[in-house]
Image 1: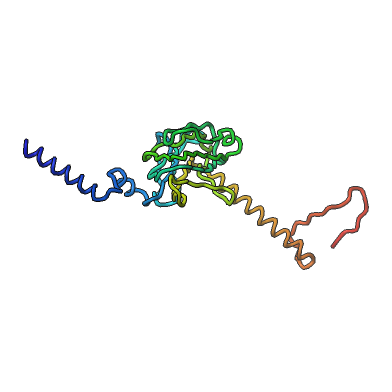
Image 2: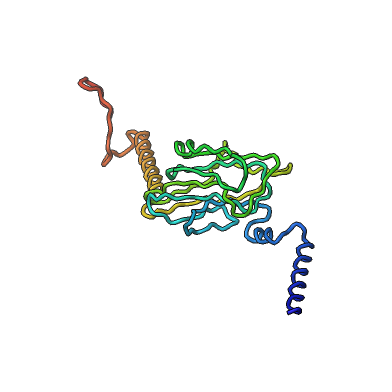
Length: 244
């Protein structure tokens, strides 16, 4: 027994010495950096209590979850590999789903800016938090939980909105460049026809048909009008001079 205790003590001392040789690394940090790019914060939208297909951690892809058409689903916004955050600003896009409600998580103390009414009416909302002293969230801590209704068919994605007039950023606790981060949204797959894709395709076909019509009008008399539909604007109950 004494030999076993002595062996365990030696093993513990060896592990402590190894970690001491690399003061910037702790056991938990080493685990995080094995999963996430070094010095990069990773944000995820994941379904609460449901299996899902995760995106590759070093990609900009979305997580994917199979849902029942129209079901109500809670989505956790989580953080991993936080580098120390003094400010966080992010704009979310809920336009593909019906926004129900939101609840603040425990990742960061304080009261952030988040307008649930805007999310419900416009499908877009800005989240913002600031703390001059900075905070560091634990891995997989929940920043916010969003509850939405899944689409009746096809796919819809809840994610971070981008654009020239949108500034998504993470402010570090110390002066310097903004933190690098990756964001994985969540695609809700209700099965059936993807309505968003079919709508886009129909619109494209309509535009193409209109373009052909304009081309025919432009060429005028050079066009062979055989099997061609002709539209005219004529005055009601009055004589008019007809074009060829």
